[in-house]
Structure formats: C-alpha cells, structure tokens
Length: 397
Ligand code: ADP
Ligand code: MG
Image (cartoon, rainbow, N blue to C red; front, top):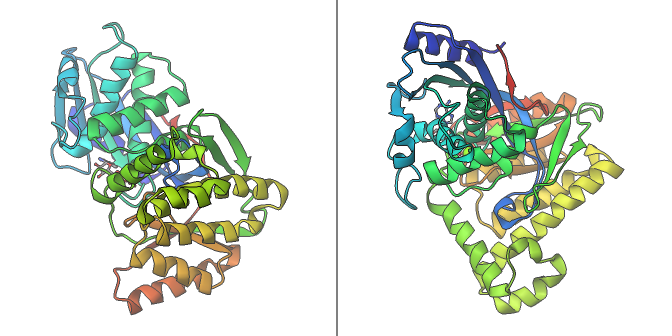
C-alpha cells in the first residue's frame, strides 16, 4: 500500500469526518512509442506504470445531490450540485473551466458519466478525495490517472456498469470538454486497460487493442524514466498548434486523418504541402510505421531489438515535429552515450519526461551520467526512476 493511498484516505476523513466507502486507483502511463499519432487515428504502444492516483470516495449522507472534490493539489475543496454540472460543462473552446482547472478533471468525469447514463436513479451526492504518486505535468499522464480513478469509483458507486473502454472515453471527454485539453484517447486507454508485463497496442481509429508482452525484465533490461521536471501544458500553445498542422495536412492531402497516409505517399505529400506542414506530417506518418514495426520486432526478436526504433522516434520529434526541449535532448543523448539501447522523449512534448531502454545493471551508471550532464548544462536536477509495466485500475479497499 503506497503513501498516496493512505493520503487519499486521510484527506477524505479530514474532509468528512468519516471513512470512505472505498479507495479506487488508476495508473499513469509511459508511452513506449507512438507520439502525437493518437489524434491522427493512428497507432500507439503505451504501458501502465506502478505510479497511481487514488480517489477515496464515499456517498454523502445529506443526499443533497452535491459532489465535493478535494486534493492535496489545492488548499480548498470544490463543491457543486449534480444538477449544476450540465451548466458548468462543456467548457467553451479556448476558455478556462468554470471551476479550478484541477477540479475540472474529476467533476468533468462526473458530468460525462451522467451524460453517458442519463436519468436520475443512480446518481447521488459523493465526496471525493484525491492523492497521487504520478508526477504531474511530466508526460506520465497524471491526468488520465485522476480521470481513471474517479471514473472507476463513480461507475461503481453509481452503478453505471461501464467497461474499461467506455470509462476511458468518459475520461477523454472530461479532459477534452470539461478541462479543454484537446488530447487523444491513448492515455485513458493505457490507464484503464494496462496489464502487468505488457504494452497496449492500440489502434486509435477502431479502438481495437492487443496486449503485447514486453519481456523487459526477462531480457535483462530496465526502462528508466528521466523526468526533466520541465512542466508541459496540453491545453495551450504548442500542442494545439501541432494538432492544427495535422488537420491542415490531412485536409490538403484529401484524407480523413493522417493515419490514411503511408510512408510511400510521402514524396507526393512533399509536393502538396508547405515545408513545415510536410515535416509535421512526416513525423506522424513515420511514427505510425515505427509503432507497427516495434510491435513486430517485440514479437520476433524481443525488447532488446527495439532500440533503434526508439532513437528514430526521438529524432523525428526533435527535428520534424519540433516538440522536444534542450533538457529532453540532453537526457536522450546522454543516456545513449552511456550505453542505453534506445531512448526517446515520451508524452506530448514541450517538457516532461524521456525514457531509456537500458541493461538492468546499468541503472546507476546511466542515471549518474544524466545527472552530471544536467549539472553541466545548468538544468534543474532531473527525477530518475525505473518503471515496470503494471496493472490498470482497481478498488483497493
Ligand atoms: P500529465 O497528464 O502529463 O501529468 P496534464 O497537463 O495532462 O499532465 O495533467 C496535469 C493536470 O491534471 C494538473 O495540472 C491538474 O490539473 C490535474 N491533476 C493531476 N493529478 C492531480 C491530483 N493528484 N490532484 C489534482 N489535480 C490533478
Ligand atoms: Mg495528461
């Protein structure tokens, strides 16, 4: 039992003076490969990590139909009526949510869940206390973890009975329409459907999934996360801009989504697109192919053989999609120079974390090299830890 689990419970008791009905949790995720492909209807290959977000939740006895959320993240709880949710959300495009942003994640989940299963029957007032050991804004999807924990709790307490996929869609809807962050479905699916020792091969168009054995430990390897501690934000700036480029590219090429463009189509695309849009498109198209190649390579040759695909993925994000940062490039270059088989930034970019696929007994040498490089470059100290592919949501108590 982790500290965050106990912390969520303690916070619930501080808030209500009672014990929660249960504590539900959902994991963050690392994306092994497939970046900015999800909203282009493409392929991704994430896995759930051991770090989780916990929601201690209980029905309210006053039955006034109110939802109160509280988090260590904020000093004050936020409370709204269930019937107010439809007035608060959706948030207008480009606007800030009508509640503090952090609260728009759990309240947005409550809103989306009610909309998916309309009627008055099962919906009762609840108190929700949240604590997390997923680093926030690090590209490890603390957002999907908070959505997954809340969605799992409310689904059970309200008896809506949705499966993991449907709850992933609820989480995405909360993130897109309540928070106003235009992210794809990858994070929520990874958090809801992750399983130990496997990565989730997800077709973001059909939402078909396949669990692909990773065999990292069996191969004598480890995955090191290098959190640069440079925070990113999805609801602003670069992320929106990249999405817009992809939409422009798909429209100019006359396809529904960049998923429908293959590597063989790229020479023709180069003639039809301006230089920058072409590079954005080339990243997405080649990245999709790299995901497919990674799944194939994992199956035929194992984890030891995927290093070059990770390296090519990072180069594409750095040069074509331009979403890396000096800190992420330093992390990747240093890990590779220190012997990593492969390394790449992971998550939406503009900050956050990189991953390195390394020999199990090289954790200390690679970590020391990265720390030294960050000192030399006068960057803030990175946060380094290894992750193993872990389980999806569950009820802990
Ligand atoms: P990432 O998913 O990579 O961590 P995002 O920007 O997508 O980054 O999501 C981070 C946001 O999610 C935070 O700024 C906050 O609003 C919300 N959030 C995440 N974890 C918590 C938490 N434990 N308590 C409250 N809000 C949280
Ligand atoms: Mg996120």
